[in-house]
Image (tube, rainbow, N blue to C red):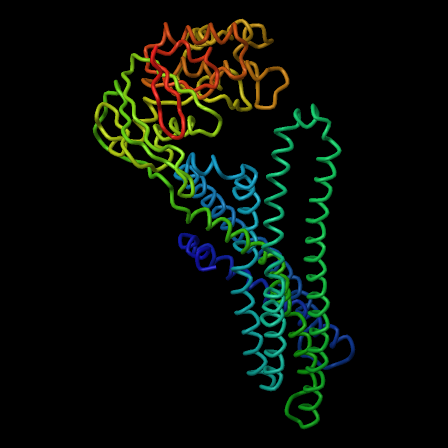
Length: 546
């Protein structure tokens, strides 16, 4: 809660406005009930020195005031909530960018999406429906206790305070701690379901191809029933709290009547004050009832908060580096490079040097660490040993300059739900139509793009049915031809492309692109266009001798 409160320091004035509107608004609601009761008392024959016109005018005035103040109270509360949610999302996106590849490489995408969307949304309960209601209840019900002690009798004030604390503090705390674990479990299950469902959508073709529709449907139903069960438990608990609160309110009214009757019999208060006390107390429970129902949502809010702050408190494996000087990228040197997971070395002693007019190929079995070498060159993970560009260590090179000069192309090309032209412009934001056409021709996909109804303006996406895996990969290669990096890292670049187009693309890379290339593949046919080939065995690179 302290961490959540730190985010509102720039919105204190707005919170005060929400609280002030809420306090005056609730007192207005109490006054409506109170003066309506006095009107009824007058109708029943009690002698009141207030005319009906005055009573009705007061009720109407407080009714209008209550409506206006309620509007502004909710407006200010939600203004704060959504401003802070936007701020939190911004902080999360900056953190994701800071954590960068290691986070996206290891974390389930559905879980991350759940954190950015639904987990952030649950914080709205805290900022819009928790903070100001607590302060409003404190001032309104505290004011009622003071009013009763000053204008009726201290016993009625103590009685009201007891029931106020019972509904506004004791019951919410008991319910919160009794269901704390349930809120955490629900958020975890919801996150797990988001990841599962995202995977099912992205892999829907493979599910159909392997006739697994019924299997995934049954798993979806099972996970949904689990969430439904947890949700029902939460609703059941909330219903019990509401029922108990209603019983306590009735008991508070009865105890007020009994205490008032005792005081009246002993000539300690006027009998009329008994009615005033009962009506005042009963009409002041609004803020407290809101508080009694908060734990139901706060359990999930705090569970979401824990997940979000766990993400925000993660330390990046490799921090972005900022240096003023530039580097002339023309050679790469790797000396005694070591890397491993959980203290198990995958790369034991990697050594090689290349100039950026060369093409170097690396071959090795699956899991041997081929792709890891490329990721280390891009500074994605910490390592032991030395990686240098032009004899300048990687740790002393500005991260943005590194990414500008060195890029990687893998077997999985992601296409955004946008036009082909805008997908290509990811590589060069100001690319002209002529440059894009030239890149498409080099990637051997120009004819395909031009055959589409809208050409470069055709909308395409990751799960589009009008584009094959090979065509996606060639669009990815077109991005490379647009970007023109100094060093290109190719990770199984032609795995989804037929032999004819593979030969065309590789020859284009070799003959028309003035860049250094490191290519890893499990196929000798792909590596044959390299100047030098290394075999990766047991964490060590061995250069092939022709």
